[in-house]
Image (cartoon, rainbow, N blue to C red):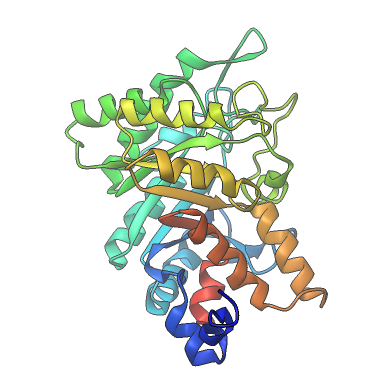
Length: 319
């Protein structure tokens, strides 16, 4: 009780604050998203995401080595194919851009390679599944997801990350991997992926904007939290190894709730809109760059074990 209790004693200097800090940034648990474009020469900056690029396979080779030299352990790949069709057939092509990128990274680094698994970048309609009667058909999409997963496994991926929010996707992928001899491949399930305005810059980066309608019918309603836990519980039952919450900063409560409920590792995706808002404010001088560290600590503090973030490279360069 005051005056005997003086909480400020433990905050009196930088060294004291460091000694008693509770939540450091664990750099080994950061994952950098990487966009790979088929047919691109060199690399191309994404206008809405300053400092983030689409890479060709050639530029990817040097980039991942730079990331590894910085101390990054893990990347997650997103492909931008040259060919799109209604079935998203480029997604499971064994000579597809992501499959080639997986082999390149595994041959040249010791990094963990995670591959996002979805159809939105590969379909000419921009949706995450097969269209039937003008709607995304959940059940006819599952075999395609399974086929993509096996193609990634053949290329040498360490982990697949299904992001389409189709019911039963984790079970279908787990079954396909196991029955094809790839039982050691981990699944990071986008368990609670919300429909949000924060994906805008990503859709430029991955060329994945829906041609019509939106994804509200399969992505989660941002007003719901109990539903998120139900979604994640189903993914756990179907064989997920890691559960993800996406986005992160606007959904810290969901990260905290999932950390309390589940024993599986919890990943959080610090999405493109969160990156662009913060980076834009820093570049305009509205905020100091220390806000970047503060934002990432908040995600760890909420309970995330792994953070997928476009700030990973920046944080490693400035630690």
